[in-house]
Image (cartoon, rainbow over all chains, first blue to last red; front, side):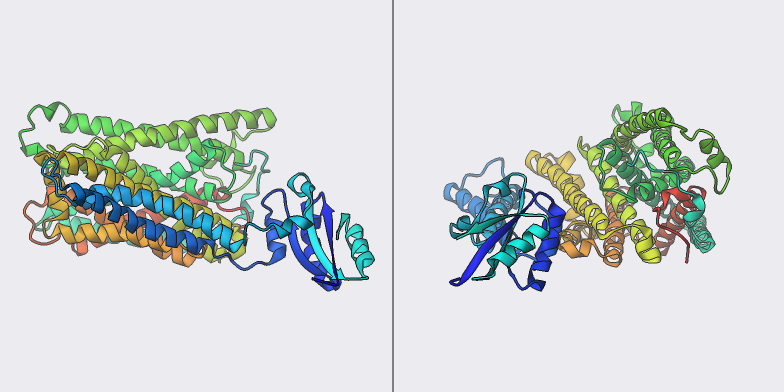
Length: 168
Length: 409
């Protein structure tokens, strides 16, 4: 936002990064995002996020896949109408295998789509305020403040034991 | 499995209240009375059928629950926490199971339809002396390994004082004193645990072939043994969840069983719900493709012909559809009350599934389901035996209870 400065506090300790997140608001700064090199339950808890909706995409994908698998098997069978070993053309017992496989496939696809939609990926703008050390040994907490309070925010991060990186 | 866990004073953990023993005894007495009444009634074969079904079900629960402790130790799982000790407590049912197996010998004329049939060469395998000898040896090996595993586990848990019984003193005298001793006990525990897992698969397969599949002696499914031991683990997990939930509901947070424990074991229960259904389906598909009358008649009788077809749908819904739909939800798995209801329903479903597998062979041309009050009471009687076995084991070895259990209510 115009008139706003973004500063990232970089912490080597996961606990310090998690502790800083709720304290930002109390100090009058705005939390923007957190970067972690590993899945961190402590940071997740500090963020107090609502439950994601990715699971619903997965479930929807699975249900659609189950019926798509059956439909595909039935469709291909009736194209040929070949009776094999006296079995019915449309045989639900073996078609269940196709239905099952499609359930898994579409669930995975639904999951990936859900992840992309809910995470709003790809996010090229976010790369402007990213530090490569967050893919290594640092936990990054990005915060914003009004123009003129950059010094206060930098002091805040440094007092909490972090390094500071300022983004334009 | 925490190898460095310091010994905990047994007095810090609550022994099961005495009312549990009374409850177990009353239930067991009710079941025994119903069984005896059935034996001397007009249809003694119905009483024996109920006895066999419940023997298989409750033994499978105990065997499956102990498998949880053994297998999680073998794979060095660290998420089990207090569940491992609770699972081990089910070994207390093993002696009762062995006695019940020997009781089956008395009812052999009512239980094995093939005794009066021409078996076309299968007599070498299907004869009473050989069947009871091999199955008896199988149970002795399985239960011996289970107790050997549990004894090593207890050596690591036992304190130097506490309620003294003969069994407890026997183990307490060999408590590891130093790191080398602990390592030695750990190695033995891993050995017995691994062997128990192996024996579980072999012995439960044998029991599935001998006491369930052989009731239709001309029907063969090579996968039936695996189906039987997967089912045993499924109900074993259900029984363990019920026990853990009861401990949690009685003692709250002091029990030390966190929501994460219920979530994790609930996922395992969900997985074995799928695996049980998968093994059923795999057998069905092969039989369906082969379309051989000797094989299809078994399935048709149980899934298409009244009165069994309705029961088949009930079993399918209770044991697969219901837990599948419910357990998709994450939160349900962390709710002890809901999990008691769900696991109890699944166990009832597996009880009915045993009736579905054994009933048609033991009740030829049945016009209605052979299910009555005697069957229910015998079920309750075995429930009483399980309560007694668990209460006795947890009273003798309170270390199997979660460390935070500080007092019975």
